[in-house]
Amino acid sequence: MRKTHFTAFLSALALFSLLMGCNGNKVPPVSERIAKVWTASKVDENSSTVYTKGGTSNIRNYTSFKLDLSAAPTVKYTEYDGNTFTGQYSLPDDNTLKLTNLNPSPTGDNGTITFTINSIDDNNLKLTRTTASQKTGNTTNVYTLTNP
View 1 (spheres, one colour):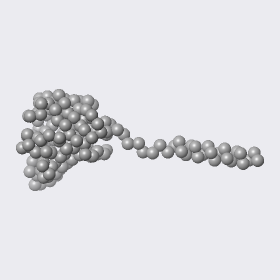
View 2 (tube, rainbow, N blue to C red; view 1 turned 90 degrees about the vertical axis):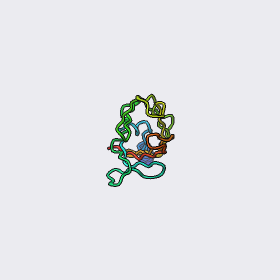
View 3 (tube, rainbow, N blue to C red; view 1 turned 120 degrees about the vertical axis):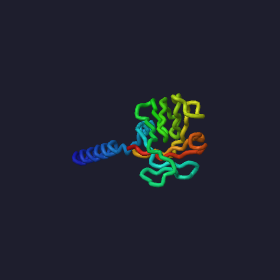
View 4 (tube, rainbow, N blue to C red; view 1 turned 180 degrees about the vertical axis):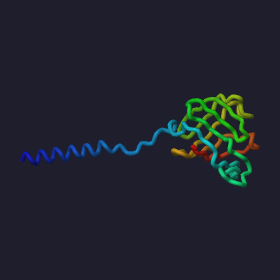
């Protein structure tokens, strides 16, 4: 009788330990995954691809484009033409990235640019600008970014 109680106790302990050890893969919050330096790998302007990293027939050269979110809440935003702006960034929700107090103020943006976060993983970030960019001829831009 004593042997069966001991076996049952060990079985219950093993099951409990197994269940406690299975936390699963917890995905870090967007605020942690986005805090990197991002560069353009593909850019669409009004649904037309104008840049692909390494492409030979790019319409626009986005090799200078950089979105540095590595030192929260500070942002360094470099547009395709090399103009750099500094300010703050925030994530009002998991699907929105907001750049504010950009200095100098980008043309027509009053110091604020907002993006919709379409997707994010460890090495890729896809953003859609919520307002048209005057710099690219009032186009709505979709940026596929990578973390180098």
